[in-house]
Amino acid sequence: MNPSDNRPIGIFDSGLGGLTSLKEAKRLLPHEDFVFFGDTARVPYGNRTREELIRFSEQNIRFLRSHDVKAVLVACNTSDAMARAEMQKRFDLPIVGVIDPSAREAASATLTGSVGVIGTHVTVTSGLFNLLIPLYNPLAQVTAVETPKLVPLVESGKTSSADEETVAALNEYLAPFMGGMIDTLVLGCTHYPLLSGVIGELLPGVTLINSGAAAARQLQQTLTQKNLLADRTEPGETRFFVSGDPVSFARNGGAFLGEDLTGRVQTGQ
Ligand code: DGL
Image: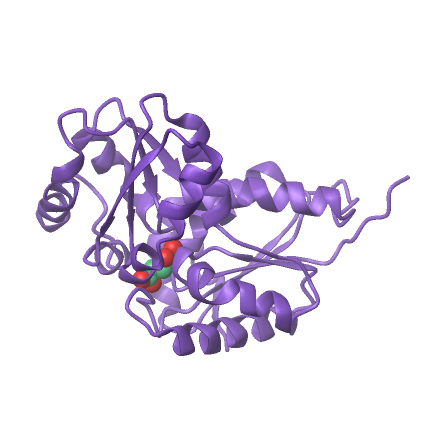
């Protein structure tokens, strides 16, 4: 029998976006326990400096480690772009990111080679998607666009096609991709899959790559390879912590996860 590890898995993001990873991770790994941390007192991360993102990421991982996690999923493209490599040097546990798995999924999904990416200022200017997608598919041509208004809209729960501000922002940002300009769009910020209903309406026929879910698939692979999966048979449990307001996180996050999080979100860090 393979060795196993029943300690929880840590997941962090600046806020609600990380739930896109958690949702897929819970589906793929139903017997695992999770500790989720959303740094909602400091969201958004998208315009932070590298120094800040390294400091925040280190604090977030230390907090998760205080809950004895066996691995960490950085469910934030922005932290991944600026801090994950440094974190992997500082901590002796597996630290899985979002950018590489989504770049791989986009590279294999595209048929025309025309790939769009939307992300935060930090993620887009890091150039990582423009570098990695053509590495995995040399025919790929990547156009990346910064979409800074989207994270605050998602955090305030404005995620539906009835929210005029959200539709206006997406119409503006997605204009370069409309009319068949791309066949694949990377939602290169884990918050954006919460907007995939509206994005799908504006870009019919375009394959949307959910970076949060792609990262969860990578997490499953990493834990399998390292013999770190839990061996229990009962369903796993998830504990939720945020640095900001637990009530609004419970309301918006619960709606996205399809779970009642009332009274289940604690203030942490
Ligand atoms: N969800 C994060 C990301 O994937 C962070 C967004 C932000 O806080 O600006 O980039």
